[in-house]
Image 1 (cartoon, one colour):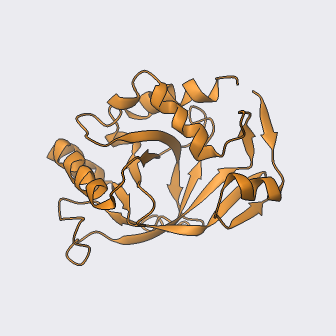
Image 2: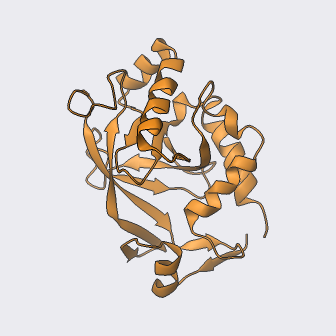
Length: 208
């Protein structure tokens, strides 16, 4: 697989406006944590009334990027998944205008299971532990984004959503006004982890 390891100056250009920390083992962290809230049947639009927990999540990404010209960051690379067969079926009956998806592990470096604090992107989800998918959504209005997330939740069967909640897996919606991100447990994806892997591999195995 053609990949390239970027130095800090190049990374700053790729991730415009982001504070970046380089880690050992070829990883980077975007230091500006995103604020997420548990998306429940309670209104997301009125944050004061929603019953979901508020959680800050850092993104932990590989430093070695898939070779793309012009050079792209991981979010831009992931946008290529929207061209994959089956991409729009991952969130069945959804009105979300999703522009891409990234597989990963949502957890916490202190291992507090009920307090996720890091989304660890996995390049090869077929051989790694993956429990969430980060969906990027294209919307000019964050209010419309919230409405579409609520519509997605309604479209899920109560039994499926209840089972995920019982296991501690929640749909998480980003409340940062400039970031339309949605974290969805793989078990709530149509086709599960296998469908996510199939879509992701269309990007990961593609040569540019």
